[in-house]
Each structure stands twice: as structure tokens, then as C-alpha cells.
Length: 408
Ligand SMILES: *Cc1c(COP(=O)(O)O)cnc(C)c1O
Ligand SMILES: [Zn+2]
Image (tube, rainbow, N blue to C red; front, side, top):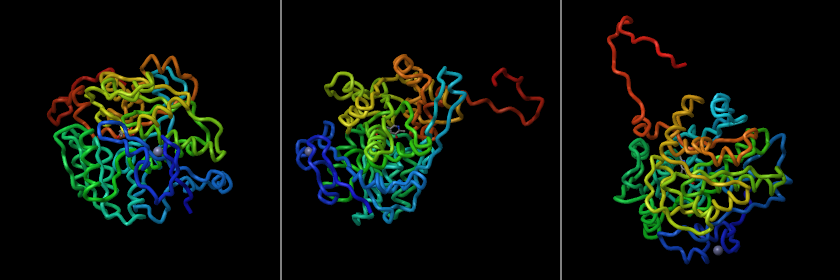
């Protein structure tokens, strides 16, 4: 059985799981579109109960889940590879780099973890429709999970969403509403939609179980790492929910007595979309003026969850940094050539941090550093294509083969 309550991350009030749905009713009153969410809720478990029930030799991770297994969609998510990247280490001069490849989720991004849990919650509540605003991945993920679970997905995306992501949602039968505007506009419209027409809203951090869903990647890293805490985890950050989820995982584990310390969390943002980085560094929040980056999945002007993201970084002893588009593309190529991993630009941003002076100076290069790869490269082939040359075709004749090149 699942035992938890919601606690407001702002005022600390607590609520029963069926007493509230989205934001803290007190703090959320002050929320208006165009500002970060106010009163984001966090699930607080009975950690003493988990500590008593958890058996390290037969771990039951359901103890950390906010929705009971009987409501889970028939759509397994997670269980993605976690492996060392020796050639990347050699190439970059780090001793112990690991990759958690969440691009291997069924819809190709880490978002599946959040969609899965919110759709499970929709099943528990008997809600037929699930609504979301998204830069693309949350939407294609929600469309896929809803298709498997026999629910309706209603999706708001900015018109700039990459084609492959649009194809995913449409093919899965979602109702797709493209907005002549930004992700921030889509976010606002989707909230208005659920307010007027109902359905369960899956917007990131607005529905508290998005954080809980994303938490599972942190639990998995811990489990796959032999129940050890890595030195640091590099996380690409847009709205700041993935990093809050990873933080929550290790805080839950610590509260249940399963680990003693937290991994240092490093928030990586794109230079033009760095509202959370600026907030972490300066302590005062300002929107990103004009988020234009090749890393579409982390392009946001007003992130929904800056407070929890900031706390994740500061309380874990981590830090934040920004990377430019050129460096993101360089890292995308490096990940592919040195680890065989094709990551979408936003996901490659974590690897781009390895090239930045801040990370090289502030992280222990002998410690275990985990790159969280959040999305698959096939979601956007146009961006890397601009730096590649597709070879001209040759006659189907061995004599026509061009001379060998030096590259290994
Ligand atoms: C959503 C997303 C992110 C950022 O996650 P936030 O919770 O918005 O910070 C990073 N990478 C990919 C591929 C994503 O889809
Ligand atoms: Zn509150």
C-alpha cells in the first residue's frame, strides 16, 4: 500500500493525496501565468515504514511509488542502461564517467517516467483525458503512454516543436494543438484548458507526480550502481523538474536510511535559456529573455520549477553552468563517436558540461560522474545534419570506391 502525503514546498502545509491535485491551494492562489509555479507539492512518504519494509537483498522499489501498481499502464518505462564510458574518459581526461541512457525509454526520452506515473494516477482517479503542454518530449511521451493505456491525450506544443516529435504524437492518436507562440504560451493555454474542460493536467511540476515519476531515474542509478551514491550527476535543465526528481530520489533514499550522502547535482542549461542558472547564482529570479537554442527540450523563458531546482543544486553541494549551442553540438558528436550514443541536443548538454572549465575545475575528475542522457537523437536529425555531409552515391562497383581515409 502507498502511504504518503503532499507537502507544499513553499509554506510547508500538508495535504492528503485526494485533498489536492496540483499546487498548494494557499500558495497556488498567487500563481499567475508568466511566473514560475507557486506552491509546488512534494510527496512525503512514511520513511520509517520504508526503512522497516525495505529488504536490500530483495529490494521493493514500489515502496517509493506514489501510485499503486494495479493502476500502472501496460507500458513499461525505465530500466534503461547504466554503463561506464571508458573511451569518453580517455578522450576527455576524466577517470570514471558513466552514462545513464534514458533516451532508451519507449518514446525516446526520460519524460516517459513522468507520463507513466501521471497516467497511472489518471487511472486511479478515473480520468479519461490527460492534458499537457510541452516543448515536444513530454507530449510525445504522454501520447504514447495514453495510447497504451486507452486514454485520450490533449497536447499543446509551440509551433517550433521538431517534426519527429510531432509525428510521434500524431501517430499515437493524440489531439495536438500547435500554438503560434512559445512553450510558455502552450503552458498557459493548457492550464486554461483543464480549468474549463477538465481532464488531468500533466504539466511538469504542476502535477506533483511528474517529480515523483522523474525520481525513478535516480532510484535506478542508485540500484544499478550497486546501491552506491555516485560523486556527481550532470543533468540538463529546462523547467527544473528532472533535477528535482533526481534530488528527491536521493533524499528519499537517505530518509529511509538507504544512503548517507547525496550526489552533487550539476544543473546544465543552454546559454540563451538560463533562468534557473541565473537564479542559482544570483538568488533572484528573472525569466530568460529570448530562449533560442538548438536544445529545444530545455528552451524555456519562465521555468515552472526554479525553487526546487535551486534547492537540489545547493543542498547537494552541486553547482550550475551554461553551455553554448556550438559546444552542445560538439558534445553531441563526441557522445556519438566515443560512446556510440546518439543523444538529442538537450541531452548532449550534460556532456557539453564536461568540456566547460567550471566542471573541470569544480568536480573531482577521479570521482564517479554520471551523465544523464535524457533524450534520443532520432527525435531531431535536422540539427546534427547541419554539421554532417551525406556522401554522394557511387556506382555499385568496387572499383568506384573512394580511397580509404585515416579515421579509426
Ligand atoms: C524535458 C527535458 C529536459 C529538461 O527537463 P526539465 O524537467 O524541464 O528540466 C532535458 N532533456 C530532455 C531531452 C528533455 O526532454
Ligand atoms: Zn503552500
